[in-house]
Length: 110
Image (cartoon, rainbow, N blue to C red; front, side, top):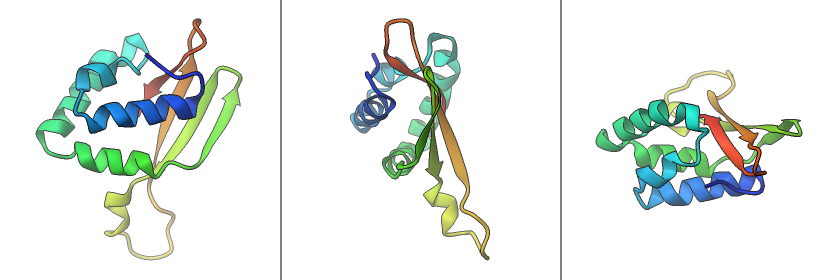
């Protein structure tokens, strides 16, 4: 499971999370990180924070190619934005993707 572009992978991953299909969502990650990410997503789901993650992921607009096989998105964490005071930049999380041998983009980490 993955997209032909980083944007397609992210859109499909969000759609899968919206269906609460964590088993399929994990398949968007590189195989070596699936177990760790599965635990993290399960914790978010059980704590009722999966909706917050989805909302944050839907705000992703900025992305840049690192090289032909690596891409990075920046996600502004909206949940921390309201607690922030002063002119400091909003906190961000990076989503890194890599193109696999089959030409599909996989998420390395959230």
